[in-house]
Image (cartoon, rainbow, N blue to C red; front, top):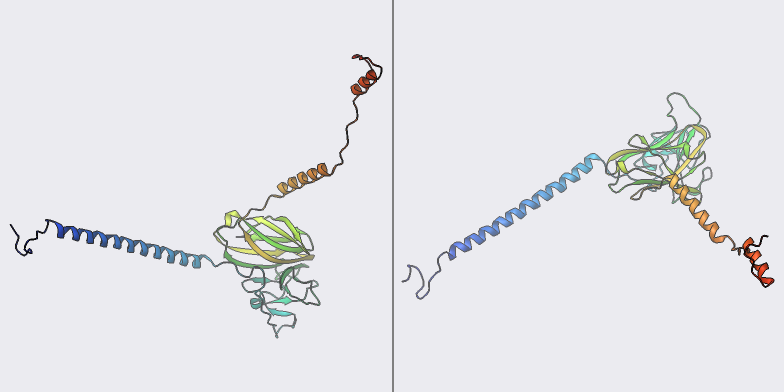
Length: 290
């Protein structure tokens, strides 16, 4: 028996047309789910990007190499006064010329100041690294309106992987004259290594990772508090505590002393001398006293 509409000699299995329809529907459903997942991922990506932009940008110009020198022709300290926004982009500076200006290739002899040191300067030290470094001078206590010491600061996003902050500095007054703060909290730091004309310092900051915070370096008041600063960076490695470094140094010194100590053959013991004397006379006297 043949169904109407069927080709002569051919039979269409029951349900064949329905099976193709189900497969097509399943394929369309899978495609719809895939598109939904892609829309969700795109939305999440855009949301994270907006959240990142809203919470803070990355820190910039941490090595001070983005400086553009434009003199402030209206300043009484021309040509040594330059616009801070161009000479130290990303940073807010304080000092007797700040926040509008900062000194360039010159040092204050008394007033609290922030300065940018460049190459081939007559009146300032050379940069610690590269073409530019920042110098913060605590200076003598000034009028009430003057800031308590010189500082540079900026707000940025601390990398998620950051465990410590490192920087190189030449601290004329020693490390207590420079304060480092992140998110309004002072960061204890210690010497990590030394280089030509500078010391690298580091402090641990794991609690600030992934957060937008204000970073500030401040030279405290003091006529000898010159703090030249450069190469600020966030590191994924923690800085060993000073006590750990001291213990490690002591162990290294002891090991070096033990290796370098000349070998001395131990002399004969009292018993050995007595036994040798007995052996010379051809007899053994175990109770011989020396």
